[in-house]
Image (cartoon, rainbow, N blue to C red; front, side, top):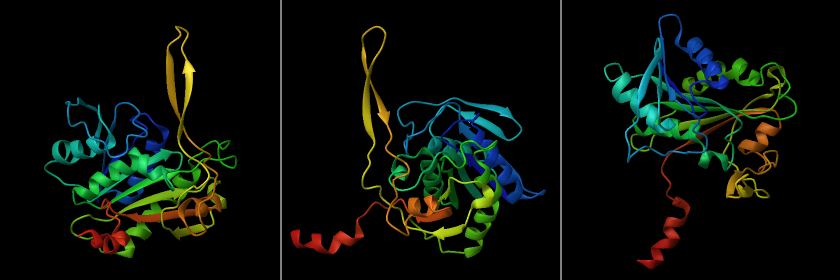
Length: 260
C-alpha cells in the first residue's frame, strides 16, 4: 500500500510522528509512506487553498516534503507533483493535536486535507486526538491514537463501504481523551453540536498600544447529544464519522420547492 500523509499542525508536529508510525504499520514492509505537510502550522484553515499565490515546496528527507500552504494544498502537491507518477492508495491527515469533533470539524485543516483527497477521488481519513485531564499528563498524550490508530483504519477499510462517485466519503476519526488502555471501543457516530459554547474573540493590547483580537475556542468538554461524536469521545470511545463535501441541506429541499 502507498499512503500519503499530511496534517495541519505542521511538518515538525509530534502528532505527525504518530501518524507516520500508524501508516508504516498499515503499509507494511513492501509499502510506501510519503509525507507532504505544511511548513508552518495551519490549524483552523479548514479546506482553504492558496489560489492567489504560489507555494514553495522543499524535500526534507526520504519521501518527506514540506509545502508553504494549507493541508489541502499539500494534498494537491502530493498528488500532482510529488506522486504524480504513482498515485497513493490512501490519504491520512493528522494526528491533530486536539479534537475535531462536532463543530470543530468545520474549522479543521486536518479535515480539509482529507476532504481534498476525497474530492481528488481517493480514500481519506482524518485523525485527531482529544485532550483532557486523563491524557495530557501522559508521557505521550497521543497514546490512544498511537495504540489504536492502525486497527481502527483497518476496520474502516475492511467495512468496504461504497464511497460514491462524486462527493466521495471520507472519515473523521477522533480518539478519546484517555490513556490507550482506557479506550472503551469504537462508535460510528454522526457529527455532534456543542450547544452551550462557541468560538469567539478576545481583545488584547500590544506593548505599543495597538489592539489585537485572538480567536478563542469554547469549552471542549461540553458534551454533544448522546450517540454523537464528542459525546462518545468524552465517554471513552473512538468516534468514526463518515462525511461528504456536499453541503446541500437535503432535508430542506422539498419544502423549498414552494418558492418555484
